[in-house]
Length: 366
Image (cartoon, rainbow, N blue to C red):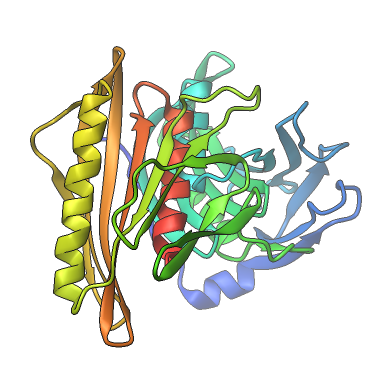
């Protein structure tokens, strides 16, 4: 990263007494579409303009809900030309807020200056600093996401790059602090309490023993071919809005019970090897090396997760493979989950949906 470029402000600069004296929590609900109301922290002296007439949906997937700006010349941010817009986006499929934000910034032609992501109960949320062209000049944006079911809220702090005052040398941290505090104290007026943008259902692998995991109801289940003795297998295909397949698949295989977690993990590795060999016979070209991503060992399970590159019919793909040993009574159950997906350069949307579905399956398998 170029050290001359601005970076994300990760904590407010102002002391707590100054923040408490300067900021008010404002409820913005009247005049907004049902289910989109929120409370937000704003500096004293700021005004609001409600801009939405309808909630986002398939026909209008992104709408600006409200614009906030200094209503008095001496209000914080006035000299720098700071304003804040809260958007609402409709999510037809479950993805991380961080992935949505990156895709949206690209669609707007923004230059990403700094980016971080943070875990939340509804997935990884995005927090970005970006620059974009506006009215013949450059504008600096601090962008943060909040997700609730199939709605994603985008908090968009902005100012002319260089600022309007101080001879064009205004401190971008003024805008960033305003946006950061708005996001830190952002609350939905009517949260749904739902985690996912689409319906996820328990899907079972049943052999001599049974395991289950959450899978999207929008993925199509097909028989998984040969299962190990006393085991089970299935394939879930990512189906597009038009019913098309080929956008990604999740392979799930359960093996026979083993006497220990280590033995079950070894059995899961053999299931993975066998499954990848079948994929090679079906026209997939697999990279020889697998990149370790995660390792987990708890009393309930052991897990090893790897990623490798692949190609099929000219399409660059990513394969995520998880070897899992579930501890149950005096034995271990070997499970292997494998995701086949176009990589993020081939189809970012498909990759984002597929990766999120895989992570949900992986976190809920039991």
